[in-house]
Structure formats: structure tokens, C-alpha cells
Image (cartoon, rainbow, N blue to C red):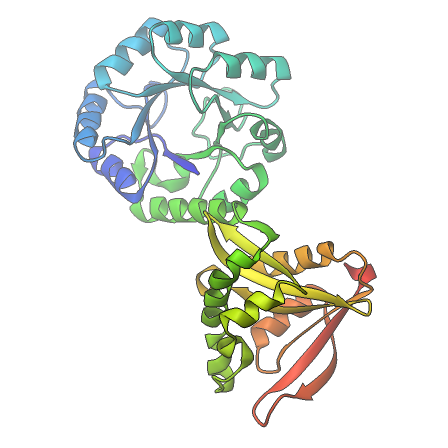
Length: 369
């Protein structure tokens, strides 16, 4: 997920944004903006950034500037790209491309598909568009939220920045809903117009990265070659259960690699993975019309992000022939019981496992899936 912090006016804020991990930094040359910056100051800031953060992309934001002025400012300030945020036609992007200046266009709903296509085709590098809120007479920086339904339809086909009223509180929902190439914020991380708040920038970046990780998680069938990684994760995940029940002899902690490998012949294993790393798993088997689900595990660092619910739903989908689904947990495992009940499972019996542990069995009928 690419993050752009826009409307920077001072060196300290620019350095802080780059240090926190922002990929793009935006400098606004629209004179009517409260975040407008002078060419000389931008030149000074970009030169300082290059020494410490040479890979950070510096973008100039322009509103109805003649292409010749944009080319001159980009070259003088050492900028990497131009964002055209006014009423520029596709020909303006073409003129910049001819001068070997990369650029992308900001658009605001409602915009017809032909205009979107012409603007996107005229862009010379990713992103091809920035999608912003539509406020009459304003060219960005309004703090208003863009139309996410409209943005989602475009982001599904093209690499775009999503802008418009994004804050640390709503950026994760925006990413989950729109799934853009990148997100852009200005007023959402400010203490006052043009003055960035380091705490808010850090929170925005953290929320954006977490949401990106969540949507990048895939749930697929696991194979025997995954057994070692799943077993390692299982033993890590079940330590909390062992501590809760003061029993470190429970089967998930004592299971051997050979034992888990043998299960692959009779059970379906699912894995939740991101960036090639398994962070969750579950296994199930069909017997007498019932799918018995077991060993639902999520890495401690990834808990409380909906991965357990996704694994359960995926397991249910993989067994359409099952008339019911069944699982169990310790009566002391309040977190597990909460998850299972929230996803539609209901208790139907309890059985003592030993003098310390009582197992709670829960079921879910097929029609509830």
C-alpha cells in the first residue's frame, strides 16, 4: 500500500513523514491553498530529503498551471512527478510526457467513463489517477470524503490514489472498501492547515499498513509440505490455552510432525497466509454428514483481525455436503467461545477432558452457513 502525505510546507514535517515511512510527499503550488509552498522553499526541502531519503517520491500539486510552468517547477525543485488537480485536459498530461515529466490527474465524481479512460491513458506512470471528493469551487484539501462506491469501481481496473477526507480513523475502512493502489492524506494528519502532526501521521501509516496486510491475506487449502510451519504455529498459538488451563500436556502441544503429516490423508487443512507466511490454519473432516472442525489457530500477532472467522467460513464453504458443523474448545477459553457464538455456533454439550479441563461442544446447522 502506497501512502502519500500531501500539503507539506516545512522541512521538519517532510523529514518526519519520510522517516515514518510515507512513500510519496506532496508539495502544493496552488496559490489559493492554505498549504501552498514557495518554489525556493520546496527546492530546499527536496534537496534535504534526497540526502536522507533518496527513494521517497516527491510530487508537485498543480491547479490549472500551464504545462510550461509545471515543467519548470518540477525541474527546478527536483520533483519526481506532477499531480494535476485542476480542470486540465488530457492534452496537458501529453505535453508533460513529451517533456519527460511523469504526471497523473486528480478526478472527482461524477466523471463519465470516457473522461476517466482518456485521463488514465494519458498518464505516463503509476498511479494513473487520484480520486478525490467533489466540492464545488475547491481543488482538494477539503477534508470531505470521496464517493467510495465510485472509487471502488475505478480502483478495480486501474492503479489509483484514493484521497478525500482520509484520517487515521477511516483509512483502514477506505482501503478495505475501495482497495486502491495508494492512499493520500493532507488535512487528516494536521494540527492546523499546512502543519502536520507526527502522531497522526504515524497512526495513519500504521492503520493503512494493517488494512493492507489484512486484505492481502489469502485462505487456501494447505498441503503436506506446509505441515512443519503449521505445527510450529499450532504450538505457538496453543501456549495461551495451556497457560489458561495450567496443562502443557494438551494434544496440540505434544503432537509430532509425523502425526500431523498423517492427518493430511484424511482431513482438509486450510491456511491463511500473507507474504508467503502462514499466520492461521484450521482442519476439518466429514463423518456421517457432520464436518468436524479442529485446531483453529491464528498467530498471536494477527489475532482480533477477523482471520479466525474467515477460516471458519472458508471451511464451511469447502464442505457443502455437510448437514452440520461441529467444533469444541475449553470452557475457560472465553475468546474462542465468543468467536464461535458470534459466527453462529451454539453449545450442545459439555464433557470433562480431565480433572482440570471441560470441553464445550458447539454446532451449526447447514442452513445457517
